[in-house]
Image (cartoon, rainbow, N blue to C red; front, side, top):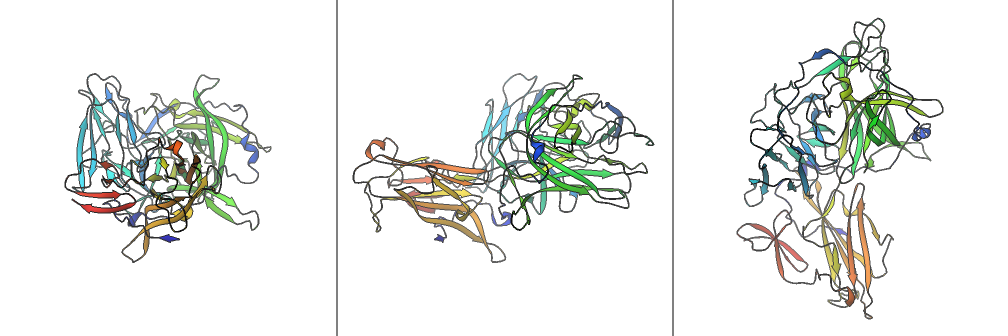
Length: 582
């Protein structure tokens, strides 16, 4: 039975505008005829790309020097581009995307600094329905966030040091501000005010993090193709450059890769569609040494392949190419879009853009010009990638900073991702992961023991949960007797899932005082939560939760408050939970 949960408080921020549909996930999807590619051979194609010839659009790069105060973004949490894939427009929105209900550590990786660090961060106050500014002098800073939160990023500073990310009071076309963190549910694409935001492992888009630099640039280089005035790294060229890639480091928690996007610009007409292919590989090494002494990427197992194309045009053109991952029904042959569950360090590679368009037309892409190093290794790669008829691969993918006279750490190319961050977390922060159920207390009508209600926040409703008991489908002494999903009504009168749900567990009587243990795992794609249920007197070292009638108070983030003052709280007495104003 599915019914509305009694607890109807949740957060002060609206959830109705962010409702989405969850996608099916299939790991290691690959089209027919490409399966042989999974076996990667030694690097046999070596590329002799030349460095930048100095032809730069939008200005030159100024290398940052001196003391720098900066933090490292949490692993697997990526930068937004500020690009709206739905209509091709740009904004100065360049946030860092995080998932809610997680304690993130912003690691201090400042260089050349001395003295005490100074942190400043915004923390939401449910009582004031606004943000408080909190300061500290800790070496690293930790913080958790609410759903659908949009707030200033933590600011780390040292005396006489350049602070990064740079934060601006206003937004101008010459300086691109970074001052935001966004927290979203799993809506299959990051959407904010109707804007679809793509992500990269680098601070990417039109923007840089240094006010000394120009807001964006794209580059020309390499040896000229016959008949061309100048050669290009990205379009038709004489160096065999036909592939570019972005690396996404191993995440702290899995995420879903829904699609790949690639930016392109053409200098003239495109006479016919240009077929492109996107590959997703596990990363074997992001700093492999090549025979000429340069540093590049070593590819691991193939995860997925997707195909798309640059559309023909009669004039200069620009836009993004989207690659969607497909699963084919073995019976009907119908293809369905899928998402990939990612929990490894991966490299997303696009190839095929080197087609000879004729008439001097070339294709290039947009790239970051940032000179800061976040400490995650090489993130952008450029080079050659070829698949033979028998399915073997030869490639040479050099770190993109090899292509600049002055190397630029972490510079990346126009290969981006549409990702989402599912989550299943206990609503009450101090709700334990182990629960003791008595043998025969508060026996219910069906003869079972006390019910225990587990409140969760999740991006999927309970009907989509995959639940196992000690890895099995059922447990002989513990069962789920009820499920709960909470809904709001939006402005159109439609029901919208709020993310709040619950499961009521009940244990069978245990007259022989047998020691029983059952680990319940609740899973959705790219997220899971485990809770252990115990029964029997020898297991009573675990705190008994759910039978204690003592009253507890929690703030609206689910944190227990020992001595609540005036304000709005969640009052919990045994299994009864309600919203109260003190």
